[in-house]
Image (cartoon, rainbow, N blue to C red; front, side):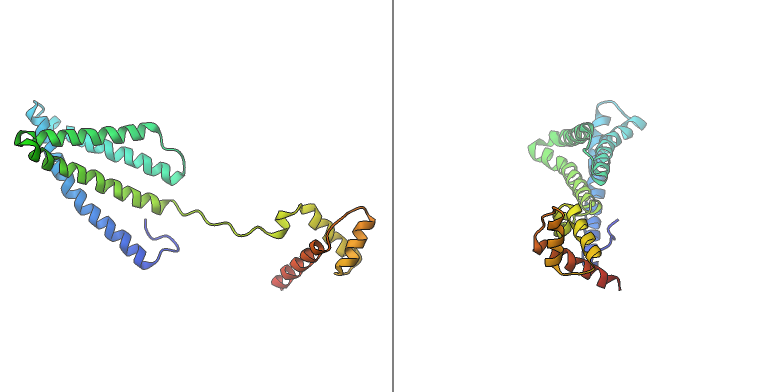
Length: 205
């Protein structure tokens, strides 16, 4: 996942340390958040299997929405609006459930009950950001355009044809030859094409 080409060992180590740190935080925060949500659900009459299942739907919605956003980032396509709505809804519900779990102990109790949910959301989304950046390669800076690409391709071809016809690399002769045939071209342009072709031929030898 983090071992692509061009990635140094120090970068790999940094990324995996980040993953390990996020995993530790997410494991504890997820357990605490799940427990708080279960307590709230159970206190409102949902016990047994349903009581344990409800909290999973909340955090599961956050994970599912984040995965959709990650997939969109990997494919370089716009993420569906539903994914953002689902992510926001999951975050809101899990925060509400955790605050409600500690509300009986006053504002401070509500704050500390909500903290695991906040830590879980931040840790998970931090990991998603790291994965998105790794999955989406940086855009390469294009090289300076080739001289032949900045001029009409047919002009370079006409010059090459004239050079081949005359059997000489004398730019003055080539310019005069083309002028006689109604083709106006700068002497420097002819020199550039001849010099570039010489470099290409030398590179093939």
